[in-house]
Image (cartoon, rainbow, N blue to C red; front, side, top):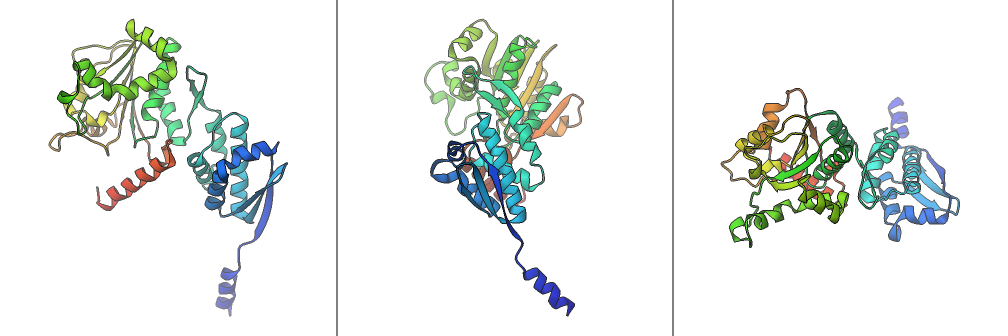
Amino acid sequence: MQDELNAAAKEEPAARCAETVPVESIDEVIRLFGVFDENLSVIESETNTRITAASDNIRVEGESENVRIAAVVLDKLISMLRKGDRIDRSRIRYSIDLAKEGNADLIDQLMDDVVAFTHRGRQIKCKTLGQKRYVQALKQNTVVFSIGPAGTGKTYLAVAMAVLAFKNKEVSKIILTRPAVEAGEKLGFLPGDLQNKVDPYLRPLYDALYDFFGAETYKSLSERGAIEVAPLAYMRGRTLNDAYIILDEAQNCTVEQMKMFLTRFGEGSRVVVTGDITQIDLPKDRKSGLIHALDVLGDVEGIKMVYLNHKDVVRHEMVQRIVRAYEKAEQSRGR
């Protein structure tokens, strides 16, 4: 008899309820729901609720726990809009994940944490907890390794912190470098002199610097040597004092190149090494200097390793799905 009662209890549907979230105007609702209600569709799908809007509130209906999560996320998203933040589907999904984990309060921390400003005045904020840990590590450590897939903001946030340190006169120079490793094309077939040949490899670094300084200011600082963007080979034999040094695409360094780079910085300098160990373009008989460094330097005082994953991808949501698919493929192959 008791078993039958237990079975009946399990079959009973979960309690349903409704909750309202206040809004200031219908325009606020329109911005929240997105073009053709694309944001609304994501929230309803991810929380399994039904959401409708009136002129002064948004009504959420469904199972009690789902309603609670959806209402909390809606309230946080509305706060983002009121502060001038943009919301998209990937950010909505991340907020829902935090709420489901019982960490809805952390959404506020991400909203309030302004890292830097672009030259046009746009605020740069951490969009995920992984990015927040990364920025905190950059503030507290002399050498930081950031490892993660494409789109997680590894390079962009490092440049933002470098620019901030430069403007605060904590360093007198910014140096950005990356190995000029071919990924299909051969350098010799590219037109121009050596600088013209390697410039395409450095373009992502230029783009980030233009964002923060503007083209004219960047050109002026570059001409007087305050900013340097160069291939990794140009670092050999130098001692870099009072500089913020960023090594990008470090997975394509050899072991020898990584050791050379990490022994270049001098007094007053800080170093950031970024890379994605799933995108190594070195010949198969050469070990990645980044992988080797992670093994060798993991316990060295003053060095911090920060690992980002698909949840930290802040580009188009399709990038997050692609990264996740590749991660699953790698795991299934036992790598």
